[in-house]
Image 1 (cartoon, helix red, strand yellow):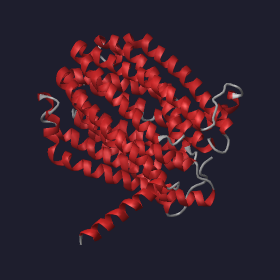
Image 2: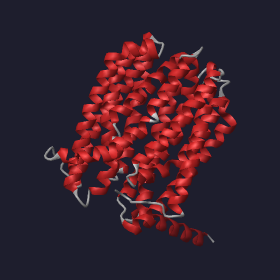
Image 3: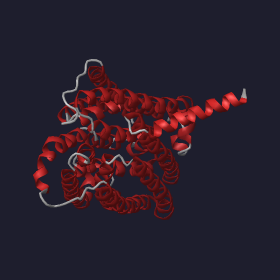
Image 4: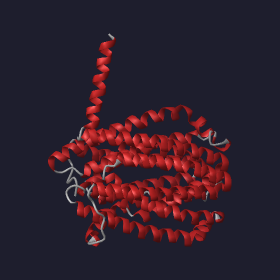
Length: 453
């Protein structure tokens, strides 16, 4: 009996090894997903722990201020990033073998534009921080922290292009290591900063980790480019300007329907009675949403370059398989993660401090939204890989309208953090209805105009 079991086990290990080593869709997806998973678990675990410690040290109001600073960086980051990370992923994946010279020009073009847009938007945040803090955030005491965060905004814009390029190379093992390094850097820097300077220290910790991450990314990206035979060059770089209009700009519009709209709704919340305290509660729940969708987001980084490299009818058939496989992987990861939250939401929130202990419903609704978002994410990847970014922008605009309308109604009747969580759930439910209909057209009816452009 035992020899039979050993033989079966060895056969299973051998089969897994063949899948892992194969230069096929299954092998590429398995390797990319595994490395993404390892990096995500450790990095997001450290992020959750640091957020709990930060919340306990700052309290619900201070943690709400910290959350609003992050939301502000994210909102301005939409403009600074200009959809360039997704652009480099798509075109590097598509061209790294067939036209490495053009791939090099696109890498250089997106890097230049990211530095320009990131620098201008960061400068704007620094200069207008007093006006923003006083008249929009109703917190004039946050001027210094907002100015510090302008550096975080700049480095994040550059990192977005670097990570997008690495994803285009399908360097998922490298991305996982970088994600792990970022988590290991951010954790001690954040905790030391909060213990020393409280909220300003937390922001400085994020800035320091982002700067070090940018330096490391830069060194690794140069090596990956050389290994792939791609030389980033300034010569003829503006000949690729069409890429900015046909893909980067609609990608930016698609993101602009999410980041700035989210920030605007957060601003509505903090201007309500006990607004920053409610923002602190929502920010605690949102940390778990970020952790839940982190792996599906990384799977998207795996799926996007694979889809972009596919051509012709055979490519369309493979795209359907990848879409179904990625959706199943996301479901297998997110749905089990929902179970402890369903039963322990109040206890989980209690870890953040006394002011959070009775707000488990906010976490529960936020987690349900994260599950819905994760399962529908691969549809967005196939839309982007096919170059249909104007369609993506239109879909996200519909999401924004539903989200703002729902949030305005719930905040007006005094629901606070609960209303914000409910608005997210309603908006993503409507969004999922549309995207799942698109998925059916893609998978069943073969609705793909081109993969890729």
